[in-house]
Image 1: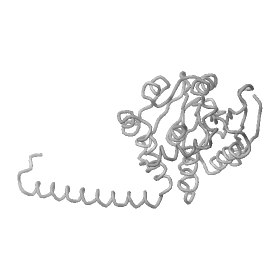
Image 2: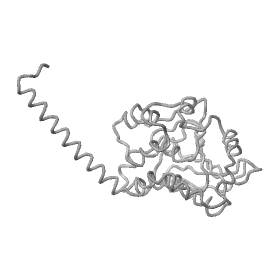
Image 3: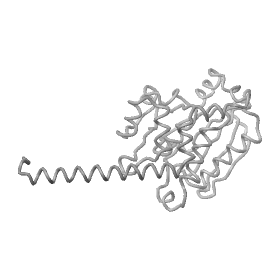
Image 4: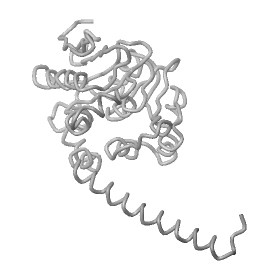
Length: 270
C-alpha cells in the first residue's frame, strides 16, 4: 500500500492513515484510524477524521473513500459518554458534524467493519453509503436501551431511513447484536469479507466514476433530506422533544388520576 498522508489524533497518540490499497486504482482512498483502546468518537478523533476527509476532497482526484480500523477487535465502540457529557455542544459541534460529512460526502463511502461497532460506531457505519462486515468476528449493536440513554433524532433517523421496519425495530427496541451473516440477511450490510471484497464492490458497482460529474453529494442531500434536516436543526429537535415530554407528562398524569379514581371507587380487584 502507498501511504498518502497521516493525521494525528492528539488525545490518544493515535492516527488516521490514508493509503492507496490498489496500485491499479489510485483513486481508492483507505482511511485506517487507530485511536486506542477502541476508537471512541471524541472531539479530537472527530476533528482528525473530518480533516482527513477534507484533505481527500480538496487535494486528491475524485474516487472512493473506504474507512476501517487499525484495532482488530473494534471498528468503533461509540461515544466516550463522560467526554460527551462534559463537552459543551458535543453533539451539534462534533458528532452531528461528522455524521453530516459522511451523509453528504461528494464521493462514494464504504465502511469496512473489521470488528465490533457499537452505538455511535454503528451509527457512523450507517452514515456511509455502503458497508462490508467481517464474517467471522464483530457485532453491530445499538445498546443504549440497555443502559438507559435515549437516542436523539440524528441517531435514530439514519436507521429509519436505511433499514426496513422490522430490522429498525430489532436494532432499536431489542438492542439486538448482528454478526456478519445476520447483518447481511437483515440488509444492514452490503457484503461480507475484508478489503478484497471492498475492492470487488467498487469494481462491481463501478463506484470509481460515480463522483466524476460533481453532483454525487447533491444527490445524497436530496435523497436523505429528512435525515439532513435533523442534523441541521438541533434547536428544532430539542423543541420537538420538549413538546413530546410535555404531552407524555399529561397522559401519565391523567392515567394516574384515572387509576386512583378506579381504586377509590371500590371496584378495584387487585
